[in-house]
Image 1: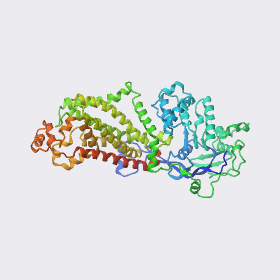
Image 2: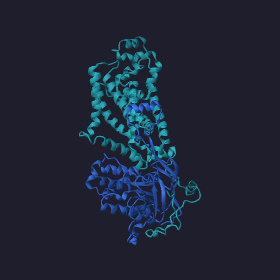
Image 3: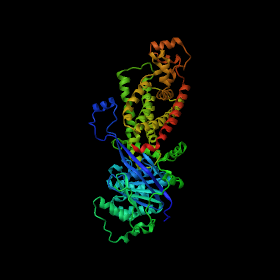
Image 4: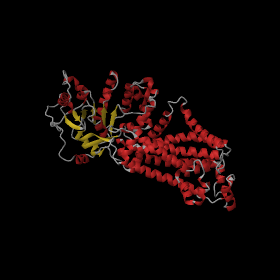
Length: 270
Length: 347
């Protein structure tokens, strides 16, 4: 593991704002819309949702950062902003290279067969057609969707679609890797496989971010944790169990029982 | 709420081999932007330069092609007849116009081989029309893909135009059969349709990039698009010939403007290529003869007499305008789209 002195990701006072059209507050008839235009009012149903409000931190090479927080606290948004997929409203994210976001919700093209999705996903990630052809079989095998690979993805069960997406996204090794809830995917067998794949990707990547509600997975995989609350950092640091416990306490959960903490050390290899 | 509470606990028992520093990871004192610059970190949402962007697009050409082909296949997967619709759609279009203009109205409006003229115009305009309407919706429609994967966003509108280009190839096969059936001969001139359609495709790509950015904001624009395009269709001589409208004879400036509009230019180029009757009747294709020209305007049954009139615009000028529109649209559309490259994920 490299020394922790070289920053790979610098997040400087990041703000991310979503604009939501069609949020409530208006009857939504043509007449009210016309009155609004005549009175030159701003459309009231355009709401700005500030998902990230002023987050700053520095991540060094070799760090594995767990991001925890309640639903809607801005975890996924933060990762998307780091990956450059969502533009910052204010502030900036600096990275040492293209950050890859490995999310199970990465929607692909539902009308297309699994096979087409694998090929297109690989091409979109910047692989050449030859690389795509070489990797195709291993991706298909890893996903374990079997014969369904020839069917349109809209016929897949949720778990199958997530498995295929994960297999595609993890087919490439990345310098900065961000994993969004991927570990909640699939059945026990696939979870074991995907955990193994993530550890392997972590070994290849310089920096790993992990968003998960599964706190055991965070403790097992991460050496540092960031606790987000309403788009701000509540707490962050290297003492993962202490912060996880504080988070559990704040959200009303029981403190985690750690009977045999030493048993988990294998998963921190990276 | 506690702001950035410092962590006071001891080193984590689970992660000793990851070697945490002794102290908490407070940001260093120097401004973060300078720290990032010192380690040569780049903004993650940075926009590449124009040429670097074009290079990235070229590197993703396989993705663009694959995306276009796959969407084309997917478009009909829910239909029982499947890919057959690629041919059936233009055929049905042609049948409707044949019914209205060929049988019910029975008019030629002073145009020789009016049916071939009409269907050619419809098919060629349809290419631009569909490209415009789909690209103005491409960014909102692809938001999940944009938020999932990093790639140059211009791939999406370009891919959509390529989808329409693939559809156009199907339409052209149908068109060839129809035009030959109306009695037009197959000549070497037909080959000129290929560069004309390529210029039109380049124009559509440029405009598609332009419209994709406009459509990426509020939805109002893509709602308005079908009406704009339909108005444009009636101004572009799809269902009539601008060259030979009597009332425009005394307003040469308006006639000129209508004829240099990009849709009219590309339609005229293709008509001149595949319809011999159009070539022979085109104003200026025979030496000017005031008497015969006048006869044409007074009796539109003498369709070939229009050849003796003065042309508003010659064929070589048409090619220049076509190339000009293609280049201007591509450059302007590309720059306009590129300027907002980092903002497309916001929705």
